[in-house]
Length: 70
Image (cartoon, rainbow, N blue to C red; front, side):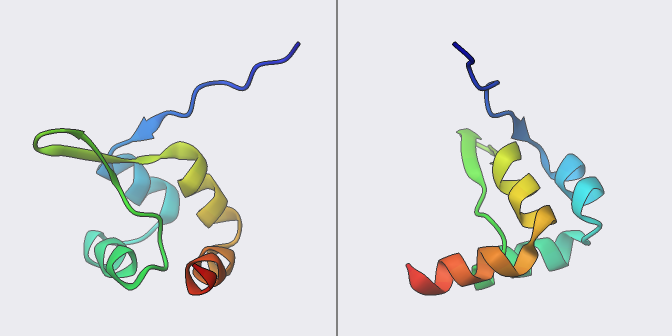
């Protein structure tokens, strides 16, 4: 029986490194619904699910299509 590895939470610097986006562009895309939303880790701490960021990197337009259908 195979188990999937746990989904890691990535912080802002890691997300920016993986995507090549600037901080302003990343937050603009989150606001527009064309990038996965961050999740709250603690009171003043957020991050992104690694699987969501990886999916976006593989096909950025696919994420946009999913949000249009929701």
